[in-house]
Length: 166
Image 1 (cartoon, rainbow, N blue to C red):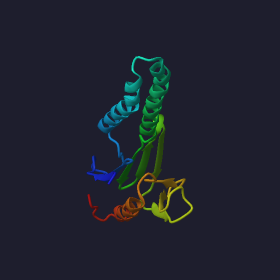
Image 2: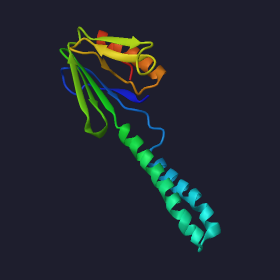
Image 3: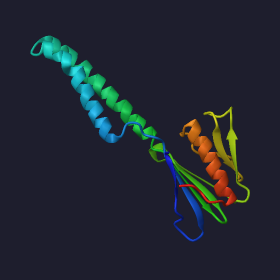
Image 4: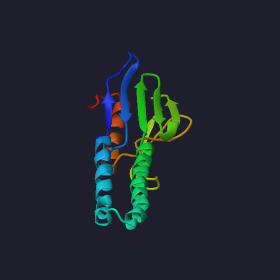
């Protein structure tokens, strides 16, 4: 699961939750993919090696590899999302570190915080929000449907003060 419950880091904390988007292509796989793509795209150049046709095709093939590189890098940058929730006895804090340095913070009294699952009407099915402070905030929108359902159950248990599963 792309989230984990961490042990409390101070005496006041009850629980900590760390969420991140799933990465199907790690950086090492990215390097292999780009290298393999470049190799396969340049294979047709062997037939025209040394001719003017090679020089006519080469810029387009390099542009194709460059476009794939750029698109994957953009995907990595857009996926640099981290959400950290700290549940303390007097305060629940949710911090979202978004792509390109975006940072958002939400705080509320844990006694009033409710977990709401929106079956429909949200940007994703089974959309999870926390309410109880000055505004309603989303949590784990990048998770799968099953992961959001599991997270909802674990958040409800944590807010009730029950033991959490790791």
